[in-house]
Structure formats: structure tokens, C-alpha cells
Length: 128
Image 1 (cartoon, rainbow, N blue to C red):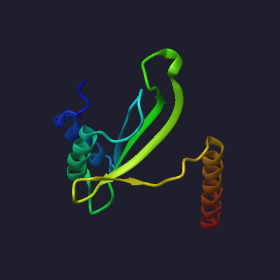
Image 2 (image 1 turned 30 degrees about the vertical axis):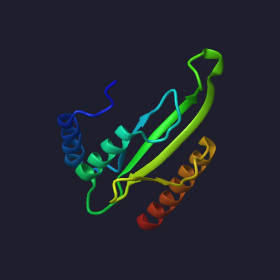
Image 3 (image 1 turned 180 degrees about the horizontal axis):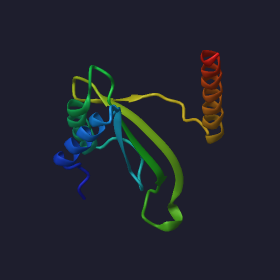
Image 4 (image 1 turned 90 degrees about the vertical axis):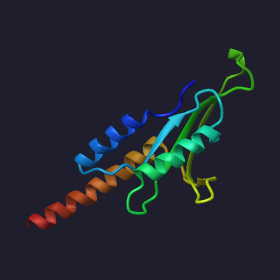
């Protein structure tokens, strides 16, 4: 199984993102049938991506999502995992996990609405 991104595709994506005035802050992939711990390939890939995409000393993040887990491939053993791991590579070429709190959908909606309300109020004040 090949889990590496083609270098040409990676550079094309970077050029497109740069041309739009956007900034790439990381990449993600899934481990659909096992836990989200970074494999040796994940660590190697992220170290390469981190060197390629990291801009102006800003963090470049790797994310791994693991929706399910099983100790065997029998259908009856599958359980929902809903695990997300964020990591970066240290100068020693070892990953370290970044701690975060996963927000519920309702909390995200509430925060977005709060931000929109504040932004709208500022716009109205500035237009007067």
C-alpha cells in the first residue's frame, strides 16, 4: 500500500495554495482500521512535508484520524474509535503529540455564530 504523496503533486498543491494567497498549515490522513498512532512512514512523510511546506517558522501540523478499531478483522469486533492525533516532528526527527480539545458540532456552530455577530457589529460601527 502506497501512502506517500507524489512530490510533483505536493509541489503543484503548494504553488496553487501560494497563488491564492493562502497558507498551508498541515496535512491529514486516516488510519481507517487501527489507532491513530503515527507509523514510521507517517513520521518520515511528515518530516519531509514539514521541511517542504513550513513557512516563516510557523508550525506545520500532521493529523491522523482513526474512526474504527479492531483487534481482528472479524466484523463483530469493530468498535467506534473517533480518535484524532495531531503531531509535529522535533529536530531529533521524533514526533510529539499536540494536545487539543475536540469540540462538538454544536460548540463549533455557537463559536462561529459568536464570531459572526462580533464581526457584524464591528462592521456596523465602522460604517456609521
